[in-house]
Length: 385
Ligand SMILES: NC(=O)C1=CN([C@@H]2O[C@H](COP(=O)(O)OP(=O)(O)OC[C@H]3O[C@@H](n4cnc5c(N)ncnc54)[C@H](OP(=O)(O)O)[C@@H]3O)[C@@H](O)[C@H]2O)C=CC1
Ligand SMILES: O=C1OC[C@@H](O)[C@H](O)[C@H]1O
Image 1 (tube, rainbow, N blue to C red):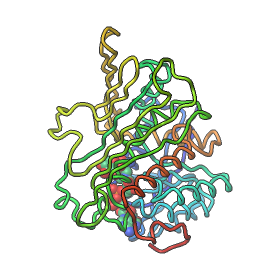
Image 2 (cartoon, rainbow, N blue to C red):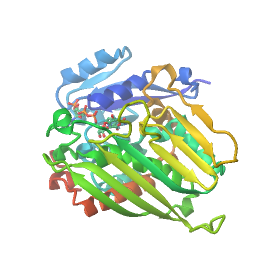
Image 3 (tube, helix red, strand yellow):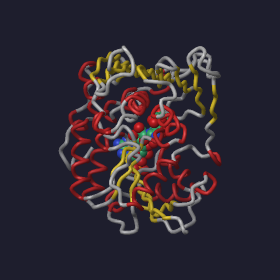
Image 4 (cartoon, helix red, strand yellow):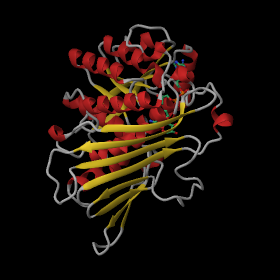
């Protein structure tokens, strides 16, 4: 049977838009996907039409593809099924709302928005208008993540009681990021938490929360420490301790709760010598053993199942990225299947889970005194940023 083809519009022409588009153009059959396929039919740049044209040419797109010099024209294009939003997180609320108001489906880069209030409004609008909406947390859709979630659900490592996840870059922050780059610029909702901490939280949530039946998923309590970057006030280091209550009785005498330790830092690294000497970026610890995942947390290539002493051999599982892909095609395949099947959200990251994670980040920011300019925290629409 012919694959279901989804027609994509790309909003913005920066780094991740390039990576995502390359993956859309990667032949799905080379990753054993035969039921869906992708076409890039429009690209919009807020800078100029020429920039969108250059992007299309540089990606080698030879099928019909419109170039727009503003985002409004993209959302009005009747040929587009779904728009991928690749602007800085400061702009996601305004951009996604523009798309939803125009009646189109959306895949929006992480972090979904600046705060939970913005996410909730977008979710409400998508639901009211019966549109598809998904936060583009690509890591969730890797076969590696799916396998690990299934192993946990099958009880491979027993009851999971603690997860430690780190997503940290050991950068010379002043030299590498200065004050204007989106990584550290408060006007663009910069900082470690929203950019990288979301991956540590993804690991904590996809193992301790998402693996439970929906009616047993409960928001965690949070305690956090935040260190501001002295030049801009955006966070350069955030450490979070999450406590998840569980409603099911434990299989032993231990307490009915699990802990997540989610860390992010842009001055010290998960992997300082880039040889893995520091050990796994993620440890998922259960009563029968643990699963270890070498970093980076956003794009791991392997994992290890380490049974408790006497429980069997250590097993190493490699999860390569087919055809030199970046790995974003798996989330795109998920979007295509949801659209084909008439689903309005993805099971891999339901909208209510995105909201809970945004609420956790709100609480972390509150405890750490991390604020952004009112203009980008606002739920007002439309606002020119
Ligand atoms: N999933 C992943 O692995 C990754 C996700 N990301 C996420 O993607 C988003 C974009 O990141 P990235 O591509 O690295 O960023 P870039 O700065 O490379 O690109 C952002 C693009 O957004 C558009 N834009 C619109 N308004 C502004 C503005 N005021 N300032 C800057 N850019 C603007 C520009 O495109 P134009 O001029 O064409 O409109 C710009 O090129 C972020 O939310 C980030 O968290 C980033 C990296 C990796
Ligand atoms: O989402 C991301 O993942 C990859 C990192 O290199 C990037 O800074 C971040 O935005």
